[in-house]
Length: 166
Length: 166
Image 1 (tube, each protein chain N blue to C red):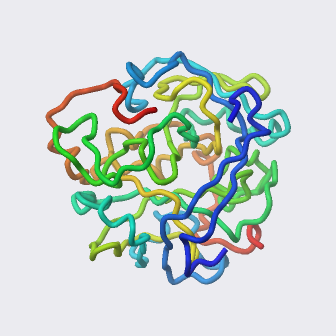
Image 2 (image 1 turned 45 degrees about the vertical axis):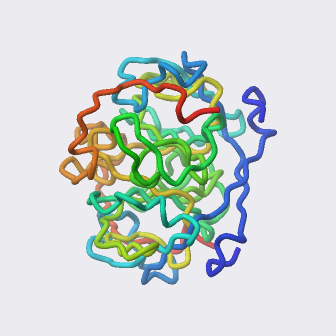
């Protein structure tokens, strides 16, 4: 891996589990966890990793980092769900990214072995998990942070359609 | 990709840029952006992606998603920087993860073409960028979220040593 020539590097990931949700297709799926409040599902971690879940029970929320396998190909500009004009992809949370990495803050309801019951899902069923991190407010919560076009958004859309998916 | 058999899938990522910081080695590097307040550096995005940065200037903070190439191999249990006993890896933000994906909230200071000047860095110099997302408080900020062992942490450590790196 040569950091001076990033476009010629490639990195391989191995999924660590699968996310089970009620959503079989993009249309109707919440576009963010905050719009999927109360929607329950589960994370089934690979059995070899169960030991690494120790102490997770104390956390109210977790970051799920996952691979958005059904997202459409990269587009430099998109009309986001909560806007009416085109924005640069990196100024949006659209899934049509160069690397289709998604991240969602979900609530941890309970754990049974390698199975985590979670809520506030905005993820398609069968999505592969790449990483799981504890949500830590002192690291992750910046309540007053200015948020560009989101701050002026007049579109109250809470669920997806098929514009960004295959 | 078969969601029923996640361990047999593998996914390939292509870095989209490189992160330049003052930190050449883990020892002494802030362990989170909140402990790297004011530390400046830059994100140099691949030239082919510059158009996708449109509208990013309005955001105070960005998520950098990156590949922690110098992290040590996966360990199911670690003694975190801010604790004195071993915790399950997934209950920590240690870099020794099955997939070495890091994420940091940094402040956006300015943009010149494909070059972003950023602050609050906790990242090693030369780290490859995988994704860039706008920080949106209504999606990402959960100030009161219970945070397990972090809530009772008595270790005020703010910088890394070499325990988690090659």
